[in-house]
Amino acid sequence: MKVATIGTFGLLMLAGALSAQKAHSLSVRTSETFTGEITDSLCAEGHHIGFLNSEKNCVITCVKVDGAEFELYNSEMKHIYKLSDQIQPEVYAGQEVIVTGNYEKETNSIHVISIRPRITYAGL
Image 1 (cartoon, rainbow, N blue to C red):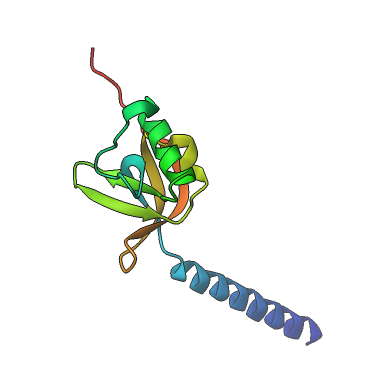
Image 2 (image 1 turned 30 degrees about the horizontal axis):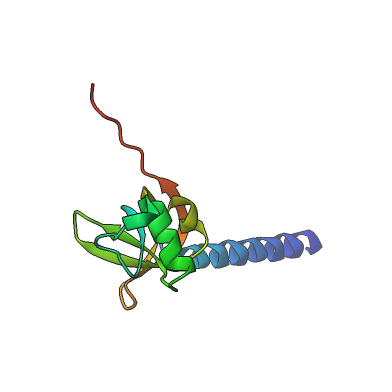
């Protein structure tokens, strides 16, 4: 009798743990991927490179000196996304990237999970 009670109790505990774990995973949103160029909020649709010699220098200067924020600009859709993370984008300033994250429509921002370079291959 004792063994059956302990076994039943163990099964109930396991079922409760599994059900709690399953419920938790249902509440987690799946991430999406976004492509575009890491730019800044001051000149997202066209950099004024001028004496800075490169888009990367322009973007970093606008962020560090002028108080702009890093953003993702998709030129095909002509859409600008705010980025929650302002550390990761610095490495990719002025480059085409793939951002993985969750989009929040209300704030038009991406909660950034990761950023990686977008690699395109030229056909030979």
